[in-house]
Image 1 (cartoon, rainbow, N blue to C red):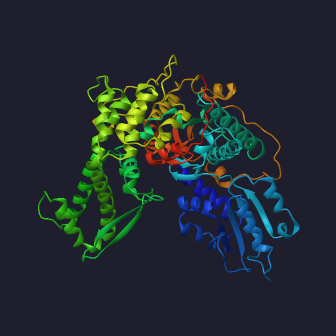
Image 2 (image 1 turned 60 degrees about the vertical axis):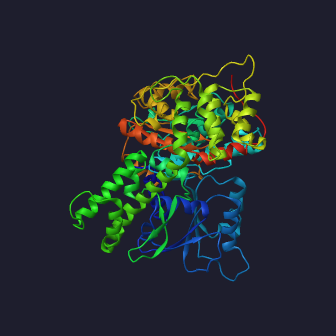
Image 3 (image 1 turned 180 degrees about the vertical axis):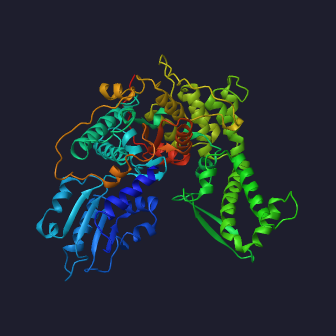
Length: 601
């Protein structure tokens, strides 16, 4: 069962069905955050088919419906709780709804919980539960903590903001585990102190869930081997800098995609023009099939599929029809427009990507790969990386952001350069000194930027040998090596230690330990029906859950699918504080406040 399906069942079974019996009706009230979760995992007909007559936003003015009960599925924030109270304690003669069944997406802070305990409010609340879904299920194996502020607070100077942010992230990560019915062994990257601090906080959350919510959390065949690995973005600073040429990663890097929506111009069969928008998600089977393929394969496959479809409708005579001729034929086939629109969308996506590739990207990708790998396409060591980058830095057609990407890759392969050389290179590239922060701030991720006399050179991770593929796509994200090492039991225990020794022993053995037991508090006494029902469904073996603080790249998402497919015994789930594009990454780095991370020696 995919991550999205788990969340779908939690919302339908544990929220809606727990309140409404057959023949009963209610209003579903959501806030912005919870609506995004619902939109990602549930179809409207599923919700309406369970007795929900209307879905309303708590942030907007609404018509009173005092004859109906309301199911509030909201985040435990000051704004949402205040709006909930205002629905029933107000100057109007009647309440917004007859009564309220309140479901918080995560743990409600005590100060907000107390607001709901006053008599005027408590009398209208029929039920109140915390369902622990404090994350965004983006894909079947992917989640986002949807926390763009985490980059600044985690890698910036230590502050109260970091402590509060870490508490929040720990709760969110724990709810991912809870939703999957996992109580995994916790591991972390040992280079940064704050990564271990976060691991400690996550472990505390998991301990609390296991004691107060479900003593059987994480029990099942092979489940004792499940692992949660917490990484920070400094573990692989190269992947967010590269121009990826697989379809999904390339699309999100080069095209303007907002909230997973792609907009493009089209011409209809009768010659009318307009703008069309399409959602890039897993409801589109063709997108799922193509998203992890190399752009060269995508272009060929979409053309072949479109040609095959048109020819199957006997609208062509003979073979060897060009794409231009196919486009004309499509306009003459309005009866098949829905199917043709799918091919047209992905054909347009591939065409737009290739158009941008043929611009400046084509000049960059080969050099980027040589710098990232440290070897050229023939496998020979790059002896003079400076010679590679100077033409790019001097090229006025290359954007400043792309020059910064190349410059950072050069600095990483050199293990730092002198202040003087950095200043010269920036001057050649036409990068103003005011923008040097984007480069210098990478130090706060643990990347050596400025070479210091007598300083120890940082070793690059030893990489796995892989079969040669596309010349311009030789780099494999480091996280794929890590995923494979975990599933094979070979991940370095010094670089990625277990938080607890007993968990380490269980995770590296094949046997499950006994279930823990403990008293169930009244506030937490809620065993999710869907969790119990689905515990035996799908894969019952161990899961590897990886969280990247600072954001996870689209190439790293692909790795989770590839490793899960290659290893049928393990299921890999990956996520981060946000889904990261190179533009987002550099923007986050440029905004880092002054200060240094707690880098371990």
